[in-house]
Amino acid sequence: MNQELNQLLEKLKEEIENIRPEDEKGQALLRELSADIRDLLERAEAKQPMLSRIQASIEHFEVSHPSLTAALSSLSAILSNAGI
Image (cartoon, rainbow, N blue to C red; front, side, top):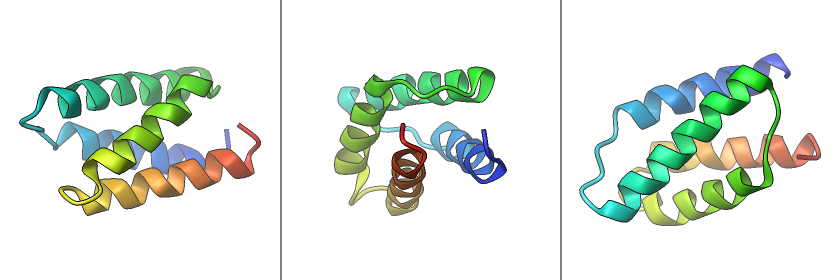
């Protein structure tokens, strides 16, 4: 995995750990996304379901957490450019 992607994943992991959504859907999205990020960091492989969760998370947190949304958008672009 390239260094830029690894750094972004670490940043996202920290950002997610600091967010406490009040709604059940937001909590579930962050739990699943956090697990995907840990998986990526451990195995350096992306999975297709993660891309769907990234997009769902972007849509869900766009207004309430713009910095998370920006980081997720960057991650999505990097993964797309990497052919994942």
